[in-house]
Length: 231
Image 1 (cartoon, rainbow, N blue to C red):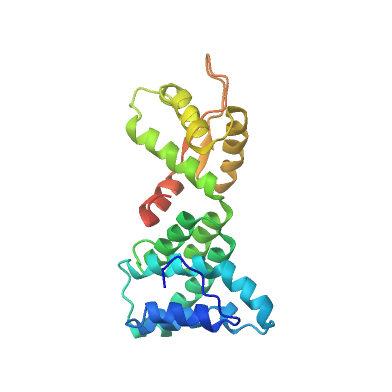
Image 2: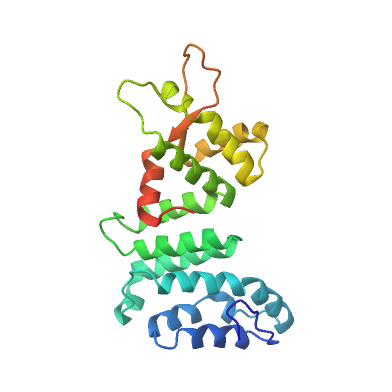
């Protein structure tokens, strides 16, 4: 069966058996797959089939990314309460996500969750996960695109934030419009909304010849980028 095909079983057995067979050499991944609540839910077979058809690609993408990560999938892992907490929290976010790229991003976040140098504790992981979960796929794309412009145009010590962003802002807005099919008028509103995440900060204050609407990434976003890369 092609990896992208959807099992047509009238129960959850088709989806479950396909995922389990794919990772037959990893008891840990098999355990995690079987622990997903939808596989053990008490809803009727017809409703379960509809749900599983919809969720199938999400699970496939997530476990593909998880399997190729640097995470050590030892049997001790499934006895670790902190890991299981992070896993179930992450799977909740996966089921609320639609785009494959965001699902892979979430899998990389979970892989990073075992690195004590990246997270202080499970509360820290939960807070970071909550931020990512709340960001739409297009918002993550905008942040990643701004990150590209900032790296190509590093801020000089002598520059103010306005002078710095003036050098690339119009090109950045045009790139959003061209690549993400978002109108220039909508970009400003989306950037304002992004400030809620703590990943983007608008430039405040009065500057000569500054009409507003510009901003820059924050250390929080750079931390997300270090943990899980970009969309």
